Image (cartoon, rainbow, N blue to C red; front, side, top):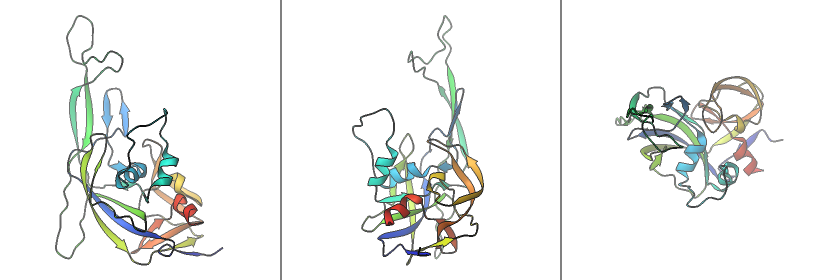
Length: 238
């Protein structure tokens, strides 16, 4: 088995993205009682759908078809995370799904209050000769010929987001037997090797690893940052 994969020859580019939400970003990372919280972590499935500009006008079935959809997309992103995001709590009338009422019912007309914790807008700081900082950092494997959007929408309310891209020249993936810590959160379904240790994030549709130590797997050295070659992309190369 070869220990090196030339991704460019295989028709893939590797890009580093820096994402900024220009409005309140909301999706339900966790929901307890009447409080819905958005964590400063974005699942890579959500990113891949948004960056591919992929959506269903009509859909048949009761469950998401992630495997079928992702196989048709021209890219695949890693999860994204922000270390300096701030959040705001918004109080609102909680809607009862069964009765479609916003009050508590009965004889007293009192509101059924709920709370939504959202991520505050974040704007890039551009300095001459320097890359933008802050925001959400992630990596993206892109099929040759697809042009990544600089502006898209994300989250349940379609928050507008701005992405700055950096392309890595002549990307190559190397097989590493020793343990490596990727420079990004990891989807456990993307791992081909062995997990030595991990720090979980419970985030729908399934758990992510905020930090992971992985051995016997494929990695791309992207400007000194170790990026896990997702199992999904490696299978496309076979």
